[in-house]
Length: 211
Image 1: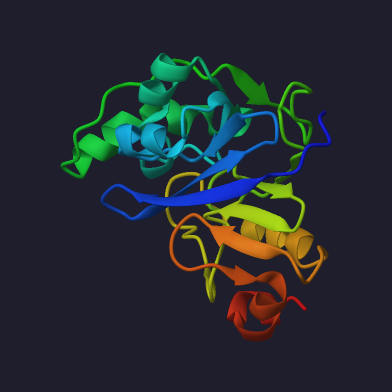
Image 2: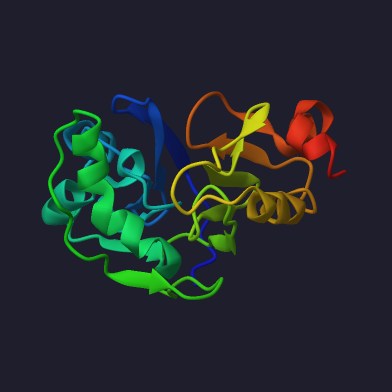
């Protein structure tokens, strides 16, 4: 995997649930997108005509994946999701429609994660942790001092565990993984404001009971 570090991280809020989408640029004019939930055109515009090589999904819920095909059709990017969330990914459009949100079925992802290893052709040096609980295949991505936690860890809270595939005991196990990481990591959640892992250990009740 490349040892490139991000030259810029662009935050875009998308869709009816204000999902946090991120575009990360590498020094060789490439880009990686995390969680393109909706508003694909806005995400593409944010890519500054860079070569988008990969789309990384933290999990398969509709508000994090619905613009995947829009992005892929225009960039040829490879879509990556954990294998345990493939059923949520495949059903994402149905969940959106149940909530009155127009969404189309998605084409199959390109790469299914089966362990905590990413493909070697990523332009940025990500690590990945399997962090189930909000969903069975939830993952968190780490890059330098940045933690993209999806809906596992929020500012002052955690993701819901009462949706299909959710499990509170599993998310507790995942949080135990996260609290062992560097306190200085900036936490970029799937929704809401950013924080640091140190701040979460000090104020987040779900982490306080585990520390």
